Image (cartoon, rainbow, N blue to C red; front, side):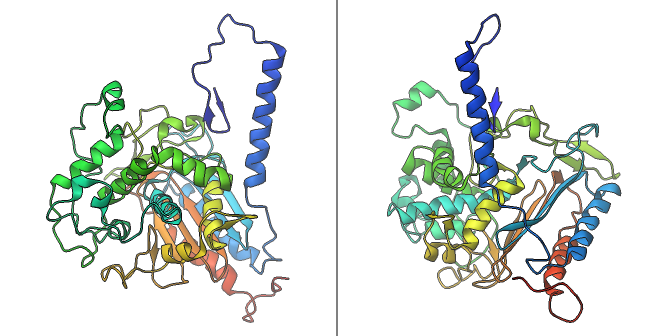
Length: 414
C-alpha cells in the first residue's frame, strides 16, 4: 500500500477486519499527506500578470506536443514557473510501451544525473553543519583514499568533475557480497560506503583540479561520504531537503517510489523503433542508493528545490541553505579548480548569477534563470533520442524577452 509516495509494508489485510478507527486514521493520514503535497507545490499564476507572453508559452508547449505526436519522443511533461508561480504545466503521450496509459502531470521520473544537484546540496548542508569543508581531502573522512594519487582529491574536486578520476563505471562489478548482520558489526556497515571505497584502488589519471571530465563515480563517492557522516544518504536528504521543502514525492531509489506513476524508459533503436528498457515493477538498477543518479521525482517537486535556490536558500519562512553556499553551488569554480570554468557544484553554469542547468540520461532537462526568476523543465523517459530541449527553452525565453520590446502588447508584471 502506498500513500503519497510512501509505502506501508508488511500490512496483511487478507481475512482480517480493520476497526473503523484504524480505517478512519488511514483516511485522515492520506488526506493530510495529499493536502501537504498540494500546499507545498508552487501556486498557479497568470502569465500575463507575470510579464510573459501566453502565446509564446503555448508555442513552446506545441513544439513538445508535436515532437510526441511525430514520435520523436514517446511522452513528456513540461513545466515553467516564473517568480515562484507556475505558468505552464502539461503532459503529453503515454507512460507505457503499449501506449494505453496517458502520462499525467504528476508523473514520477527517474531523474538520472539531475540527482547530482541534490547530492551537491546534501554536501553543502554538511558544510553548513560544520562537519566538513569543500576543500577537505576526501581521505580525511574515507581513509582508503589516503594513497598517492587520491590523497590530494578534495570534496570540491569531486563536485566539479575535476578530481582526475577517469573511472567509467557507476560502481565496480561484480558488487561485493553483502551480509547485513555482519555489516552491522563492521565499522563500515553501509553497502554504499563499502562499494565506493573500492574506487580508491584505481589511480587517478590527472592532477586534481587541472582537467575536467564528467564522472559519475565521483558523485557516488560523495553519496558515500554523506552516508558515512550521517548514517544514511537517503534519509539525510529526506530529512534535510525533501521534508522541509514539501517534496513529498521525491526519493533516491526506485524501491521507494510509486511505480504506478512511473514510466517505461524507452530506448530508440537504429531502425527508429522504440524498445522498452526499465519498466515500472522492474528491480532497481542498483540495490542501494547512489549520488550520481537514482533520484525519483516529479516536475512540481523538483521545482520546489529549484525555487529554494532562486530564493538564496530560503523556502517560505524557513532557511534551508545559507545564501553564500547557494552562490557557491551555482557559480563556476575555476578560482579553486582551474578546469571548472563552466561547472559549479552539481550544476552546469557559465557565469556567477547566470543560468544554471543540467540534463539526465533518462531524458530529464532543467534550467534555472536567476535574472528572470524562471524555472523551466522538459521531462521525458528515453535513451538515445533527440529531445527538443533547445527549441523548447528558446521558445520559453522568447515569451519573457517579448515583453516591453515593442513586439508584444503583454503588459509588464505588476
